[in-house]
Image 1 (tube, rainbow, N blue to C red):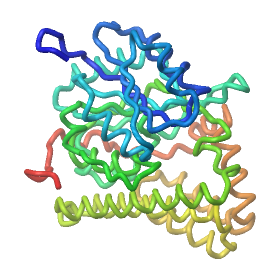
Image 2 (cartoon, rainbow, N blue to C red):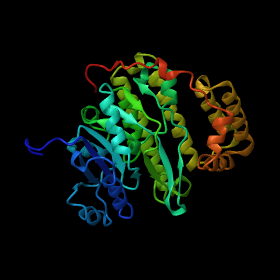
Image 3 (cartoon, rainbow, N blue to C red):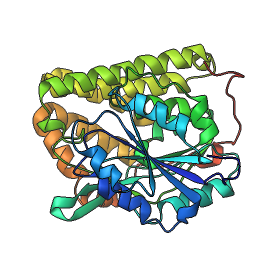
Image 4 (tube, helix red, strand yellow):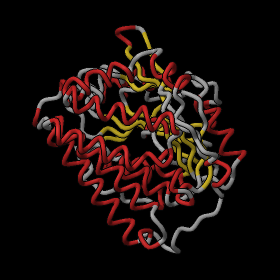
Length: 365
């Protein structure tokens, strides 16, 4: 970009690997935004695809800046994308997902309204294009402020991935380099360190569709054991790297927020291990009890009872049947909404207690 060129408002960063079937749709969803094309750049970082991804990207060469690199994994692709981005903020999109048309306009409006915020997040839709349906993720709580100020907020934050996150470019670059051991699950490190680095704004608008297909991480039950082991190893690395970053920057000495977030991650990692080696009833019951103890302080009384019943059901049903029922519930177009109507989780006024302060150290490690 020359000195005479105007800096784009946003970089639409698409990281991709062997997404020849989906990449055109992802790019088209960016081009279809109700946001001026003159104020955006589209940057595609190809992590060494072995299919026809380069040829797909070439069809958009008049609108897309395409960078191809050797295969190194998701974190390495994001490292390059963050370093190469020209925009004032970066909105991320995986090469197999799509944005809804209002995405960039809404993100841009929020950043303009909140100069103190370095990150904007929102929920996404679970998308089943072959079935012609999309299901809103209803678990998202729209928190705004500096989340480590509240242990409740740290426990409630979730329902967010790379494709539902945007960062101011200067914030993204402060977090570099992301550990390149994270071949997948780069967001499992990126999001924790980001929320401890900058205030955020959460908006309860579903602006991204997360595609379910046979080769993505959503298809956990169909994944082969070798793929699951690689994914689990990457997630364990994300936990270790997050713990190291918190330790290096003194966050464990500033209250319980960092430790709570790591404990959340450890419970997720334990659940991922169950996909490789199914637990017995007692082990699974112990996992559900730990989950209940961690989150019970932020739940309304009725939801705590609901969780107790679920924990007991886990012991009675065993891991496989419990997990199958849970997946059916989560992907139902009506059941999560009905449960929230009958047994609300409760929010306890967290937003009112959050501040826009930044208690980060002088220099991130």
